[in-house]
Length: 137
Image 1 (cartoon, rainbow, N blue to C red):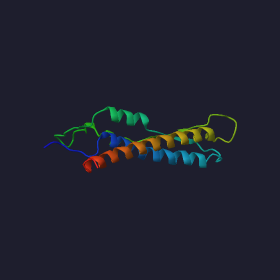
Image 2: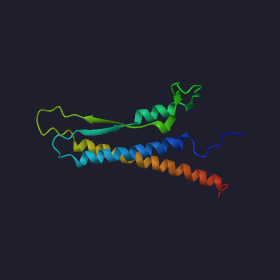
Image 3: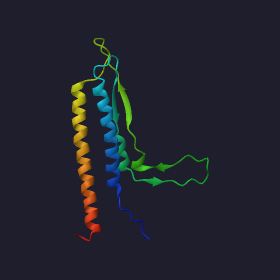
């Protein structure tokens, strides 16, 4: 029998994107909240490249013949995680805070737009599934 999946790779990618964008929103909000904290280093969550690589590489499940073998294959989209980095302020002036409120607000707006786009696409995918399950009604 054929492997039938209701959720395809697109839905999995969109779901992972929504999860990571929510995490990124929290990181940006934390940066904005600490904009006046002396010595605070701004944090950035990067995941776009990892997600792009996971989407372009097909999921491969390796089969281990011995318990001591290293795991092989890729786990695909579900294994993508963001990388959190700190931005160190190298300026000798000021209080050592590396948060730029203008940059954070831009990142916040961009992230919100991409979150909305992903949620609209996944909503459309589910409405197409509902339409197909309802026999076109």
